[in-house]
Length: 309
Image (cartoon, rainbow, N blue to C red; front, side, top):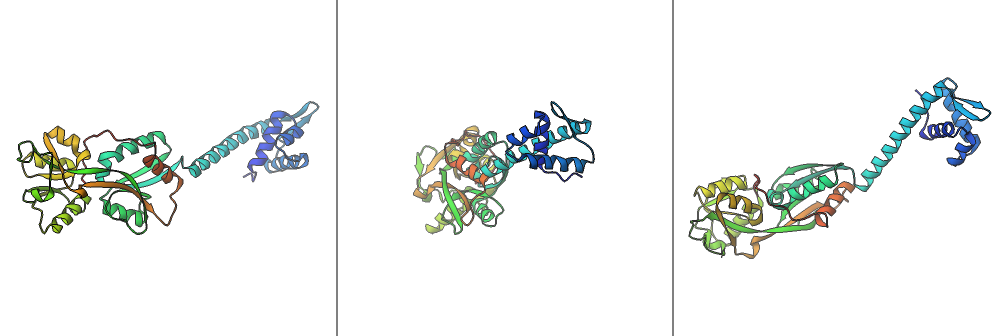
């Protein structure tokens, strides 16, 4: 195989196209003697004459024409590689692993990620839905580059950036005695049968903690994994449920449920983007973070979706 380099191919190709070694050396800012020596070495490696010198300039031989075509292909690939590597450096091309809470996904993140992928088709996203606690673990153990969570308390080792938020509301049938209220206190619904999300979710952890603060225990009648199943159970009269208001609005409307805001200061929750504090995010991940927190993102169109909180 030929042990040439891109510069040698570039000199050879330019000399053949300009029909002059001196003009090629001037264009490429290389000494004429160095340019001639490189082309001579290329001919030696090829084992055949590649150019002939005529009174009007140099011409490629039949083998030289083959080498010219090869040189064009190789140089084009080299330029393409350079552009691709520059795109990686700038974050235009790459791969980002994202873990996110289902509440955030349903409310806004799914829509924002769709818009990001459309705007950045060369960045591939690996998205995994996890409860916030599990998402934090994934980022801390480098199983994810970015986590999007329901924020509760700061976590050592993570840098956290705000990303909108939501308001918890009580979902109930339209014939429920509380359906006419504009808001309801948490203590006033603890005697109700509850349809709840599974224990690992941010919503369930928050409600359990607040119930214990009041010296009470939630009367969980049914425990499910998704917003959709939760609303189905509520619609069948198995209890009431506490859900993120904006995320569940389309489902509630479709199933004829009433949403009554939970009148507690802690019922307004914050979403956040988290990354490792000890490492600067790679360029594609930084590009995604800037998109989500800057002008690139916009409030999502609310669509029914299956995951839980």
